[in-house]
Image (cartoon, rainbow, N blue to C red; front, side, top):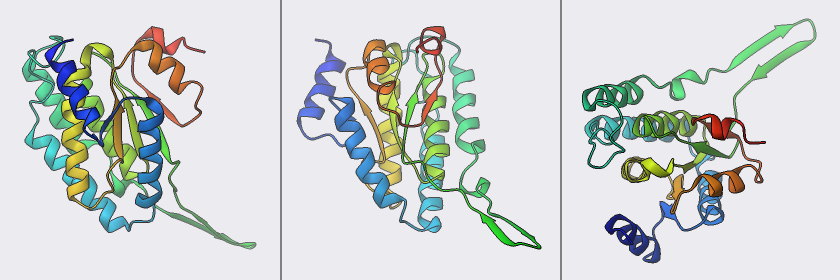
Length: 211
């Protein structure tokens, strides 16, 4: 067992509320958190997104260090990716209501949450993907369960913990951002493609070709 595995295992056994030992546990926590979150005001949702942006910018080098990452890409480029995703990913401001009126009455169109979204993240830009996905998914009132690429699990866990903590500090319920350990291609495939939640995938051909 590696040092990283031992640390994560001890946190899971100690009652971790971000990293769970199974997909069922991670999804269950996210479902409960999302039920609470969808009833929060847009003011709270905006505060949560702003806190996530701030945390991501403050820790912009997370995932860029080859020591914690998978040694793919240039550190300075990864930092810029993280900053771009933190600052420019659309948030609550992108959810505009629309009204249509005519001879037959008035129609109001408003966006509503799906519930829990499964986000499959890649190996080549793991931190940036987690940041962008978390902002977009939570801005819409959803919860997210991340399925990290096995070669980028250390980085993903670091960033996910940071963003989850920031969200809770701004008023979000615990469990709105979760993930699992260990992470394997097979567990991701078996878990997500038999479960049926909305899925946001960003990985290679092996995942794209899954039935």
